[in-house]
Image (cartoon, rainbow, N blue to C red; front, side, top):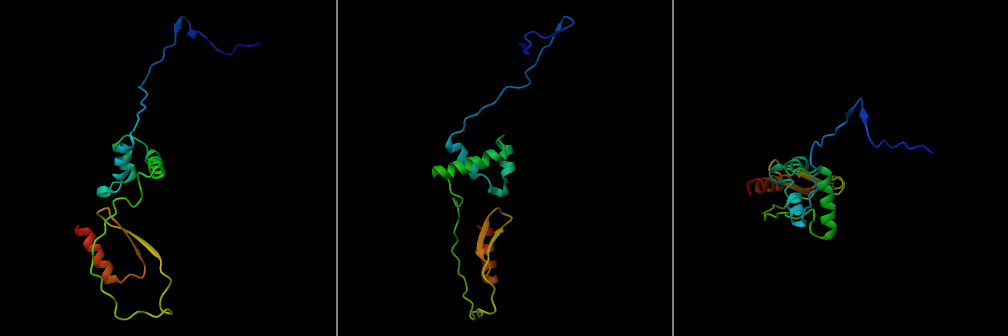
Length: 137
């Protein structure tokens, strides 16, 4: 039977030494801290990568926290959604069914970091009013 494990490593009287280059960091995060980090994505246009770098975690960790917090009922993707009252003009003439294509869901990301979700058949004037109201808030 052969023993492949070397107990003492030495070369010409000199023993090998190893250095510890850093201390292993294992941090424990409370759900409140995770929630605060997850919710900071999108504020002032911050991306997941930027938030991860700021808190010294990986992007994958933030996505995992989102999943776990959602499963626990502590976070929803629409948390913090803002609704603005608008006077939306009603178009005087409705196009006929033959003139319209089927509506498509649209997501618009504004420079301020907000996102708008609307139907592709929205009146352009109403959309313009909506964008101005959100950017002004």
